[in-house]
Image (cartoon, rainbow, N blue to C red; front, top):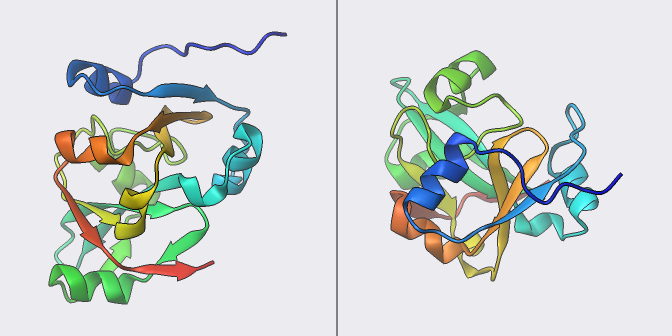
Length: 163
C-alpha cells in the first residue's frame, strides 16, 4: 500500500497554514508508549531532531509547554529555577488533554485550546529542521525551528538531561 503524503487537517496544521508557516507532513505507524524512539526510527531521522511537546504545570497548577529533544529529559528543577517557579511537574494525562485539546501522544504546541507559555530547550533552536507532533498520534510535521518564534510565545531555556 502506498504511503499517504497528505493527512487530514488538525488544529495544529490549520494554525500553521493560517499563519503562513511552511511545514512538511510525516505520517508514521504509531505505537502506544513508543515515544520519539519509534517516530525517529519510522521517519529515518535522528531522535535528537524529534521534539517532544510536554504539558507541565507550576506549583500553582498553571499550565506551560516544554519542548524538548526526543533523546533528552527535562530537569524540572533547572526549569523551575530558570522560569522563577518553586516547582514544575508533568500534568496528569487528562489535565494535559484539557489544557492542550490534544490526546497524549498527539500533543502539538500549535493550535492549543488554551494559550500557555512555551519553553523551548535552547539547542532545539540551533537545528536546521525539527520534527514535532502535528496534532495527532502517528503524525509529525517537519518545520524550521526559527519559525516557531513567529507564532508561539517561546522562551529559550537550558534544562535538558541525558536520557
